[in-house]
Length: 169
Image (cartoon, rainbow, N blue to C red; front, side, top):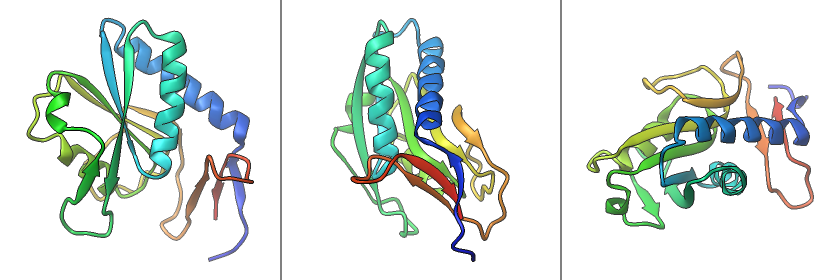
């Protein structure tokens, strides 16, 4: 694998994608009084925080940020959350991650909510790589990339000393 990095999205483009996704979420949930934005740590949570900031400015509904920490290496669902999952009953959940590759992370994210009757569950990713091993789709994606398996997508977001960017290596 080459060390050459190809810039896919710069800081301004990332913000434009997140802004657009926020407006799509607003359109999809205009009649709601509250939505819950669940960011998957680490970088999905950064995207979720930015979505919440925009929605707080443009939406008539209240938005609340939830945090999900997953053990992505495990073959079983192991998750830590900063909320009681029962609080999500009959609510709209927006599940957010940075990159959709195999779909495993989002599938585990879905698993947290399986025993709760939700009003709606939507998914957001900044980059959709289209290499799914799981039957997972995104409702809102910043950019869809057709890549080869050997390539890697690096999302640099809210990293001290570095400008936000998405790279393909």
